Length: 142
Image 1 (cartoon, helix red, strand yellow):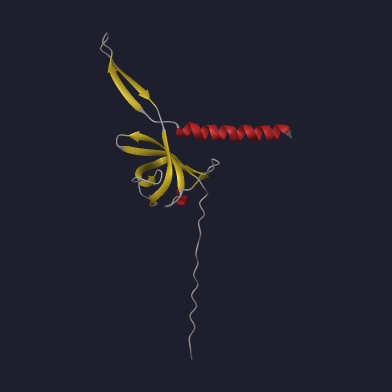
Image 2 (image 1 turned 135 degrees about the horizontal axis):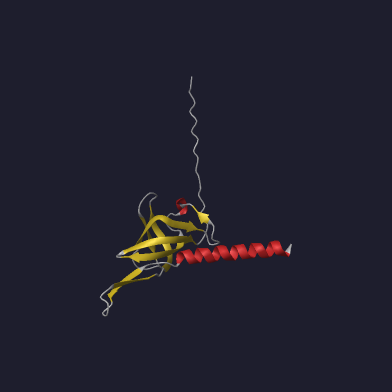
């Protein structure tokens, strides 16, 4: 019994570690020339940034969403690719359809030029999708 519980704890810890590790990447390229040999040396440095705030605009199928960090200031535009994923606070994957305005989230991103490219989005509270159904009945008077 203890082995099963320990295995579950280790599996969760590994899963959280993997999610954190996936979020911690960005690339900076530095190119220098070796003075002695004249060869070009290229060095890559990787860093990820995160920010928390509220999603202010998201349109499914678009290339970006906007997020306002804090209560003041203009929202920032975050671009995403097929490599970006959405998670709940426990690390469970979610569909992009849970994003909508006024959802608090933490965005993990890398900077490429003047763009912020999303690697991971963690929504702060589970999004509840409500479906409204309207039934219309027509009767004929005789």
